[in-house]
Image (tube, rainbow, N blue to C red):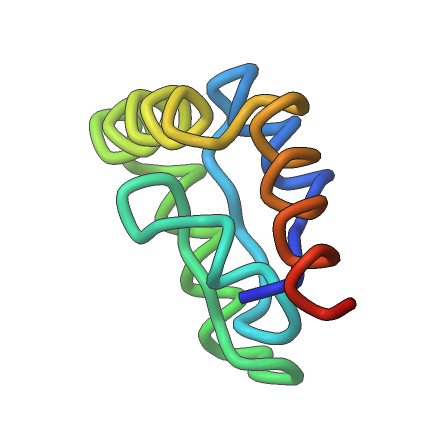
Length: 92
């Protein structure tokens, strides 16, 4: 995807488990090993996701590890800019 959820990538680099929506670029940035994604406006699933992370420290810890791993797998700024330049070159 050409979209990128920068704030989520930054949060994952600190090992923060993510709770977010399935909208936009978030599913392209946050793998299931790093967080819980719920459809936009789905209050019951959002409530359940929050409850799960608050109450289940073992699961929260696994997602934290998954977040750190996902952050490691993200391209560096140099790699991302090179990919962007490559796309622009093909468009011209």
